[in-house]
Each structure stands twice: as C-alpha cells, then as structure tokens.
Length: 133
Image (cartoon, rainbow, N blue to C red):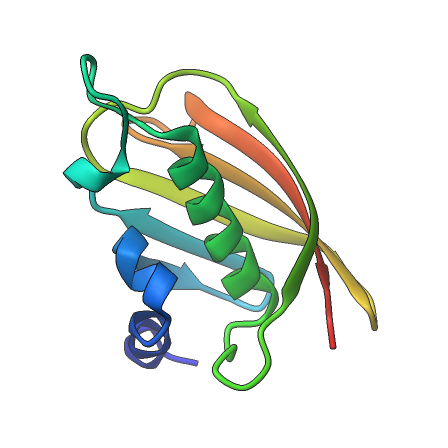
C-alpha cells in the first residue's frame, strides 16, 4: 500500500483525525508516523508537555497500522498494552516507530518507540498486542 492511500484511510478514522498524525513510512513489519503538536494534546499546561494518553494512543494507532495497514475493512483489535514513559514529550512534533515482533494467525505483538529530536532518546516505549480477526 502506498503512503498516500494509507494516509487517506487514516483521515477517515475520527480519532486518528483528532490525533492529527501522518504515516511517514510503511513496510511489511514496520510503520513510522509523526504527530503534529496541538493545544488539545497538552497534558501539562504550564510546561506544554504532551498528555500521556495522547502519546499512548498515538503509539497504539501506529502499532495497529504496522500490523494491518489496510485497516479500512477490518482493523486489528488491541487486547493489551504496556507503555513506559521515559521523559517528557515537549511542544513540537512527535514520531513513533512500530515494529511487528510476532504475527501469528490470531495474535500480533508490536514494539513501539516514540521520540522527538533523537531516536536514541525516546520519550516512551511500549509493547502492544492485537487480536487479529
């Protein structure tokens, strides 16, 4: 699937539109996306940090796309997630990279990292599991 068609599908999902992200890279086992910072994403208004729920949701969306990029018909269903917040995500773009570590007939596991300025300084890491139907 090409990126333009994929981003068209992303824009059809109301919550994905709320998050306001764009897929930058897609392969058979990897997806990378970037979210644009907006005031509705703020969790700490004094410091203008991202809300943790926005970060986790963005990471989940990127993971779901990595598992099933052609999600217009039947999306992957999240069944479990673990997120470790490593440092504050400050005002500015946020990138998430999702690598499918295992994809069976019913369950997929995805490792996700979110970063800002440098990939080697992640703001969060997560492990997501999806039910494939």
